Image (cartoon, rainbow, N blue to C red; front, top):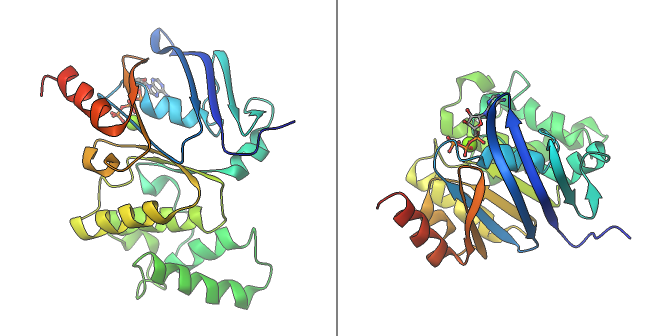
Length: 231
Ligand SMILES: Nc1ncnc2c1ncn2[C@@H]1O[C@H](COP(=O)(O)OP(=O)(O)OP(=O)(O)O)[C@@H](O)[C@H]1O
Ligand SMILES: [Mg+2]
């Protein structure tokens, strides 16, 4: 029976790009609602996160999402896992802001007029009202990040993986994002260097050179990471 209660399981995951070993045997059983992953630049966080929706497949070991091996169930897993890249240009597709949301909505709403109406509501929810007809490439970096988030959330994934979602956001929008995340019923995995963002998370995992070196509640895990970085 597939386990559909929100589980992300890594078992003995190893990965290298060419000669560069990036993950050295990671085993994790993630069932908490909100989980942070932190670690130095190049420690393997994005590689690990991309395995959750089969963007990267592990060379050794397995990754299982809601009971399904991602290697064998890419399509289903990609429907269940919304992924937000740190670079929003990678996922903004359509010429205008509203069209980008409408494209996502086309997976769940067949009526064009209903899609247009819903897209405006979604843009307002994500602080982008007034930008609906603007060319997407003209948005500021933070506005693009919000658009990418809105486009992913709107189709209702059961798991949201966000790779550095606040890098371009100003204080107001990063607080807005924190509130949005706090209200989400979806399971959330956030990779970030914005440590205060994780204060009220359920669990924080610290990666270092491809290994899990701490896995705890936010305060002790962040303290460990600070000591690792000599801070
Ligand atoms: N597609 C790729 N091809 C070759 N090397 C890669 C590729 N993706 C990542 N790497 C390498 O793998 C290592 C881990 O990268 P990764 O992006 O997982 O790190 P990260 O922990 O997310 O870092 P950051 O905090 O800087 O985002 C790095 O040394 C990187 O150069
Ligand atoms: Mg990264």
